[in-house]
Length: 85
Image 1: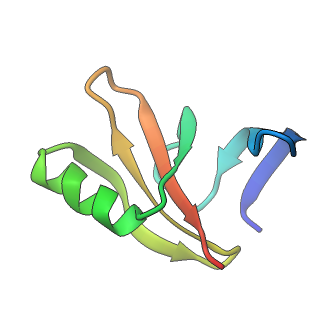
Image 2 (image 1 turned 45 degrees about the horizontal axis):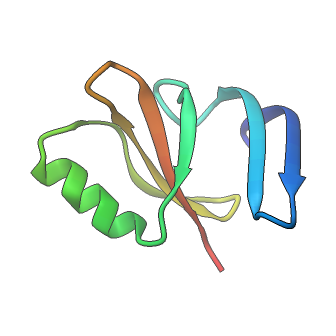
């Protein structure tokens, strides 16, 4: 795995999962936050339609996620992700 994890915590009763990440070796920039998308392909298409800067293209990563990075209007890099089943 190419992501360096420093800490994570899950709340099974709510489904919430928080993970602090120190770096991402496969993307050109580190993301500030990750957001789960039920349909990551549709989210990618919408980000492109709206003219958002795609920082890291839609990619199937070897550790079991499909994701892309997009730059929010304030400059924050967001990792939009779906875990493959």
